[in-house]
Image (cartoon, rainbow, N blue to C red; front, side, top):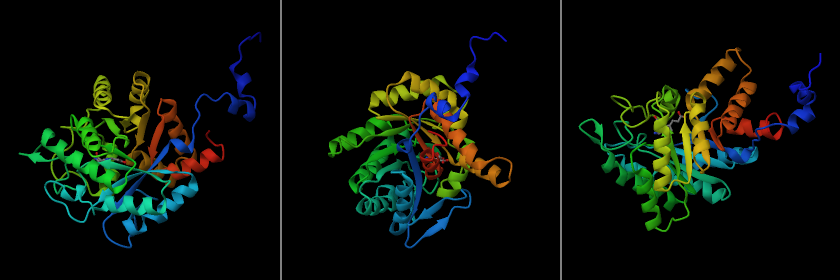
Length: 327
Ligand code: PBG
């Protein structure tokens, strides 16, 4: 056969294939989400997230040690408080569960880069991401409290804050509060295009943050929409976000691609609890090779344009990257 162009030529051996790889990944791009629960001496498995644990602040360093050893030096903290109320007041308590966790980690592992999720749903007794007025989340009233939460995280030593509430104007509100209080260099990673997704199910069990009534469609994005993601990202850029995020990841690869092409900021993607739980369950059932599907899924997110990946598989992926299985 007289073929001039043979794409298979570049696939003839592993050494060559590795040389022509278009997507390069590194453990430096990974962030590991971590659940902190109020109390002492707790390390309990999370039933909805096989392989994940909740830690009390006094034991969280056991997990950080594992992360650091695996080459994962960036964590994203979520808090599960003992006390919930209508306005989520334990979220900005200087001795709250996240604030204690930050201090514990930073004291023992100053090189661990600590990011905090800024939201109210784990702290409110109704489970919504803000303050309610007649069963509606009051946007502008909530902004003040989000700024307070972010500031308390920075004061406890957080390196970066990540608001996930989807209120309008939260980036500007948080930026102002940080700047006015001497935290000009604490970056904001915004959950910019966060969709109202069924893939958050296992997380809500893990964090006890399911809404007591209704759903989050009044503030999180409609999965039908693409242009609206651009609008959300544009606003976040204007308000001073340092990193943008698309969430979930696997069902929103088109959005990741489009946003990473359109904006100059680093782009993060959150491969959420439901994505992890599906791969785990299918692997356990013997239907797929969990390890290979984990690698291929992560790769697809980077190939779509993500620079940063938040994933419950961070430690396993870092290991796989070090061994050259993806790289
Ligand atoms: C808080 C928050 C959620 C997730 C991250 N931050 C839950 C939600 O919006 O209901 C989901 C993460 C995951 O599913 O892994 N608002």
